[in-house]
Amino acid sequence: MSVWTVIPDWQPLDPITAFKMNAMKENINWVKERPQDYGHSSAVANVALTSTSFIEIDSTLLSRSLTTSGGNVLFGCHIPYISHSAASGVANFDLLIDGVTYLSSLAGTPKTYGFAYLLAASAADAYPVNYVWVVPNTVLDAGTHTFALVGKVVSGTLTIALIASDWSAQSWALEI
Image (cartoon, rainbow, N blue to C red; front, side, top):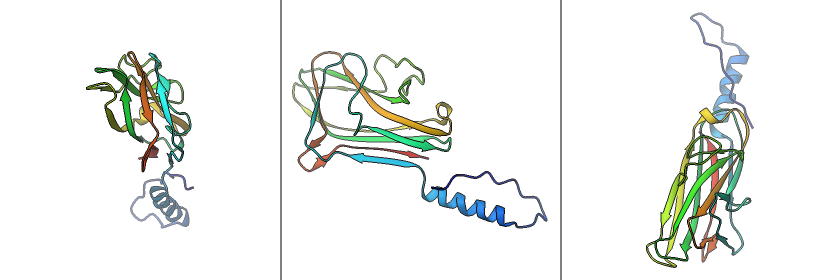
């Protein structure tokens, strides 16, 4: 994997050096090979979420690890469907960064409702869930980071399908 190299500014009449040309080549390679991590489910599985505090939903499938160069990170996930056990059931979602920082607040304590929520119209209605979030580089230094989808319910049970028929849950992270 290439690393982004800061090239000193060129001044008029500066010679073209192998270092500068190689650095430009490596930067082009880095753009093509940006750090990324992707995963999708391969086994039929449902997760029952009953916690009223934010917890990691699935540490294997909906958690991504990435070594960054200090740029913003795009995190996305798709869940084939989720359903709540009660009409007007509420589920909240957030993104936990490195196990300590929540995207909703950019701090160690999440906002009450997280970054997103789902309100069920009726019991057992099924909804697909798709989220794409930008994690700003103001909370990320260069290095290895973990991004995990976390969730909670106000009451009742949220069923999260990690695979349904021909659809599988996916998550991904990409430095942009």
